Image 1 (cartoon, protein in one colour):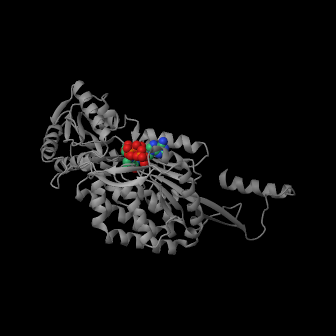
Image 2 (cartoon, helix red, strand yellow):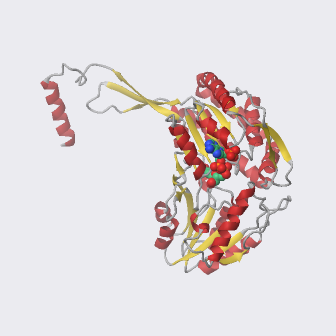
Length: 485
Ligand code: NDP
């Protein structure tokens, strides 16, 4: 049994928000065992029964909205408005997963082909059993819910390990689920640090859904490899926004500023780089600079950006800005942040493409804007990083073409980050941004395995017999030649 505890502290004032157990590997094993027993009755509820509980959960979250907003603000430091927006988007996903699971996952008939005309073929989607969900702190409601809601709607029990920075939000979501009539073991929460997450990977869960940094994603995958446990990895990004010569510059500047600085830049799908066409570059940079100067990071209620949630992230921001400046970048707004976690927005232009501010995830309120001579150059530079999560294109004529050429799992044309708010769209990346999908049809199917069935309706050309005659082989050959010759 666990005896040690840890506290989550608020980035706003350092106060203790709450204290939680550091769950040991034995505790995690026990939670997974209980979840496995509970999974059977959750699955037996069927789509309609689960939808009732998930809808009640959604209503409960709405009924206690202010309480959750305050807790998200306390644990992450983000402004109340950002916390509210995050929860609104989450509710949409919860509703979508519950409503659409039956249509997407129920057994459906598929064609059986000419040679197997006598077979009735169908595919259905079977829940894995128990899914381990490991989540980050930056959007402690929205991000894990992309796995939790979809895994539960698909019929799995889940054991959730929230980030050590936001355990309170994880525990709150679980209490709301129980208030809504869900069984405590169907959606269980274990708390602690990295080792608790590592224990979850080794606790015999049937699938792991990880959201976090690329480095930790590799550790999770290595742990899961020991037992061939399948994983979804939603890792970081270095997303780019492209501005074409015919773009609506005011809209593009607004989007770049929101994409870069909202949530203090701690957004996996945040905009960290912009490539703007030389013909509009100066005007675009001026528009971005003007809007950036309006922003103020702080801990008060009037601040547009909160402090950074994770203290060591401020060191990464300082290092990236310093490296860019050392390589000749121009600091258009702000400069190397001083000590502390309240980081004012930084706008850098003419940044060397080899600098860490261009190549590595900064995860703070910084934006790099570089000039390109053509949109081909913009695509080439945008695609030259290891990450491939998402991106945005502002162009009147070439939006679709450029979006299709931009590397990443999700691209917005003439807006930014909007795909995350459309529950029907899959969410996920390629390369160092991970693999697998949450959200949408793909997200539901990520948490169930396809099970094929075929039933013989009447005897026809039976191919699977040792007593097959030469006549049968001859007929098959004639069919094949007629069809494919
Ligand atoms: P981390 O990778 O540090 O942690 C993510 C989670 O993994 C935390 O719960 C952490 O626990 C846990 N963990 C740490 N070590 C291990 C381990 N060895 N085995 C299993 N679990 C472990 O990420 P952050 O929390 O710092 O989140 C920020 C990152 O998340 C950024 O890179 C961001 O881009 C990415 N992200 C990606 C998203 C996407 O959908 N693609 C969405 C949101 C964020 P603990 O906190 O207790 O150490």
